[in-house]
Image 1 (tube, helix red, strand yellow):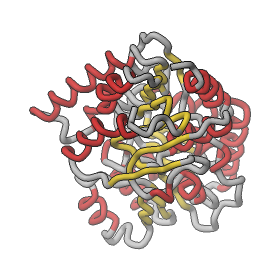
Image 2 (cartoon, helix red, strand yellow):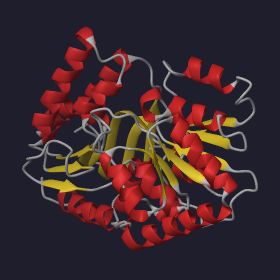
Image 3 (cartoon, one colour):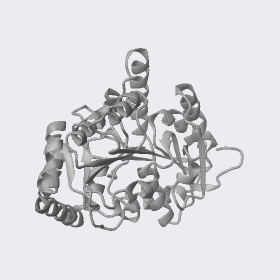
Length: 366
């Protein structure tokens, strides 16, 4: 514990996440509803931090060395009785900090080992080091006071106390249903890179001349030059709008008037069995989803009838053109999106149940 003693019930600590991250906002909202004081330590603009947090402390992202230093130091600088960790590289240092009387909650919101296959830097020496760190951190996560995973298949599969808290939408930052814009518009919200469908989206919209595209989220530095060049070509010029990283409420405000949401993930180890949180949010906003044929996200779209499953950019362009040319088809899929979301989507209860568990840890005698 740092020398000033505990000042907050909970410290959410991240070495790599921006404080605008949607899951971080959902966690803070649940903790605040449970009457807990929350400190957030992360990256980015303090003003994009979650509403209700008692303290938001941010640092510049920097390079890998800077991240490593944050991973070691942040758990010790945090002043909460409970440490909630969002990244594997913070776990080793936090495990030691736990010996100073704090409870430890690890939020494993992705399969980190599989995710490395989606990172172009994760090869050679750097890749071996990263995989070693993930393996060690996964083992340590099993010993946390509480291990939270974002889906049933996400490791560690066995832990001392493991709970699944999926990325269900928080309706407090989703806009009310709105009339679609006169000009068809597609929306993408999330991490922006090739394997998450960046160039598939661009090529699809290029072949659907009546459509515009709003892209919300940080663009991979590796993919950005090519993406900007592609968006500036004659068949796309003026139809793609880049919004960068926004806080959740600002991100989803762009769903007002949009027609569809994209989830054109590549079939990688990280995404094959995933259901991206944006898919639930699209449907809740009344946006039919255009998705690639990965098992779970495709099954959701087929079950709901609220969208189209496609193989590639050609198929996605066909879906966009079909919607633009057939208002009744679009209206039917939009209605099914709203209906499915209201019938199936969970409310915030999983987050509130987690917050109740964390409250017990925060009030446990040291």
